[in-house]
Image 1 (tube, rainbow, N blue to C red):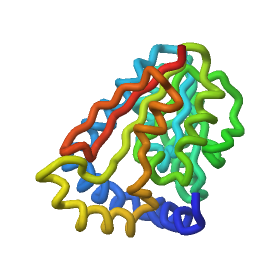
Image 2 (cartoon, rainbow, N blue to C red):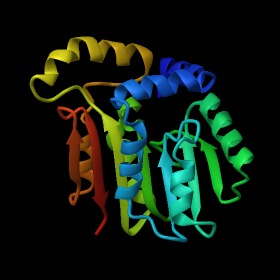
Image 3 (cartoon, rainbow, N blue to C red):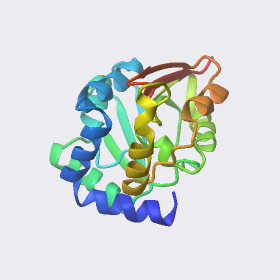
Length: 212
């Protein structure tokens, strides 16, 4: 992540209420629906190990932990020191002993695998090289491992595309969103069995991939 990106997400970590409003706009008021859809796409089972890339303040921890249960493991990773601190507070306040937070670059992943699944929610498009992140992710997944990505991109179809001159600069300025990044193409290159489901003119994407 760039220095600018670190500063931005450190700021958002101190203003999570404002961040929720921003995501409310990005998800057309259906943030919870799409986050659940992304987690459900992983098909997690009790006792599994799941890695979250760009975990932010830990918004998805409860849903991930519910699915792997107390015998499973959730590892959240983020490069923003502020987000890592807030995520650790989330874990501490909930008393989750099987949820761990690591500050690291997602392209290098200094965490021990194998993981059964990996999840990235609104994070890959803010990373300079999502292809490298997905390659690193693949290297720590067990055979048959799954990955799910929830992300945003500029509107792909009319009449929605008419909104791009307003929406794209707004979100590029307020986040580290790299709007030209093709996250779905990177996923399809790394996981040949990938599938993509999009909504709202192609702007919200839930994509999945699986190792053979």
